[in-house]
Image (cartoon, rainbow, N blue to C red):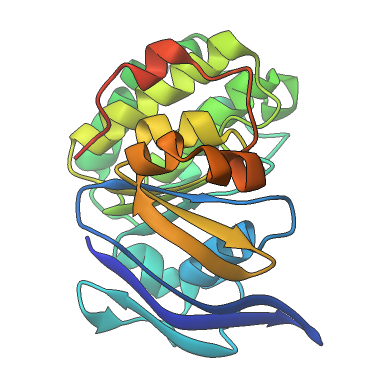
Amino acid sequence: MRLELQEVSIRHGAIAAVLGVSLTVESGTVAAILGANGAGKSTIMRGIAGLVPLHAGRILIDGRAIENLPTEQRIRDGIALSPEGRRLFPEMSVHDNLVCGAYLRRDQTGVRADLDKVYALFPRLAERRNSLGRNLSGGEQQMAAIGRAVMARPRLLLLDEPSLGLAPAVIHVMANAIRRIAATGVTVLLVEQNSHLALSLSKTGHVLESGRLVRSAPAAELLADADLKRAYLGDDPLALESLAASPPPV
């Protein structure tokens, strides 16, 4: 699924959160949106998912405009969001949280098969399938949030801060899971504070500053740009060399 944003602007009341952003994510690739807190990254993700309206611009999926479609229709069309903060149902089991991701699907055989795939992707969730959401660790909650989005069987997966607050070992699990998802042909758009991680997973990167797009380039080019790293990406000690050594999805 090819995603294209054309001069997208989003406002929160009188505040301009996103200003004329245009970018493209080619079908079957992973792309990262980078920038400081408040740059507008999560707002763009919510705009693509239909959770906030556009003030101006267009969102195209495989050349078809979707900016006026309701969120439910976007999910049916193959877009799924794993939101920042995970937002599981705390009084529901892991199993039931995952099944909620498939609530618009009617292919029960396929739903059961995809549930098995999620448990294979995150074996820890299989062990915790009967545990309540509120009793999960942060890493387990993030696994469940991504698994829930995967249960929608998306063609475009939006991941908002999947490594936030996680220990390095759990970040490796997340990174490997993202690679495995992308290897199935799913297009992935990734918002990440850990820029080194995000770019090691991505084919392209897009840098935001105060709601404006200031740079789009191949991920390897962004990682190699010392001036850009100092200005926007930081010198992250958690560079995750083992991740960077792995080839990004193409």
